[in-house]
Image (tube, helix red, strand yellow):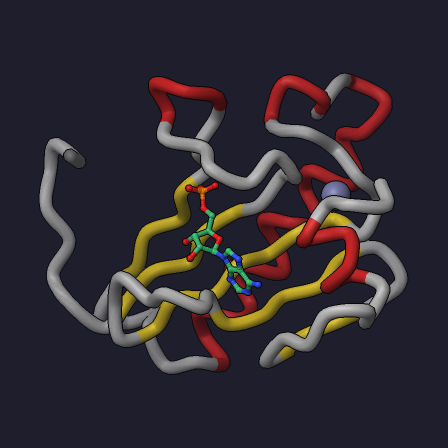
Length: 114
Ligand code: AMP
Ligand code: ZN
């Protein structure tokens, strides 16, 4: 989508601090980090949110999680622990309407989340 900020990042039209990229996904540091490690993992294809992860996109959904898990290890937060967050729509706190996982770590997380 032409005006979607994460599509622009996926296409390299807007700069980001990229930590991982392949044909299907891109991972980059969040502009407003909520933890010492805060990375966003997005599909390059514009999907609005988790509701568009339908059965035919099972492989993509799995790939996003595998990339997140691998990045947690590479970024040194696997042993201490991390949180993988997927906000959806208003009550979920979704601000950017392009599917993204938040990988958060490097500090103690609280439960329940705010
Ligand atoms: P959400 O509330 O789940 O939609 O999260 C959107 C996230 O995107 C927020 O944590 C923002 O800080 C982050 N964000 C917005 N614009 C950018 C950008 N250009 N580069 C990196 N992160 C961004
Ligand atoms: Zn998009």
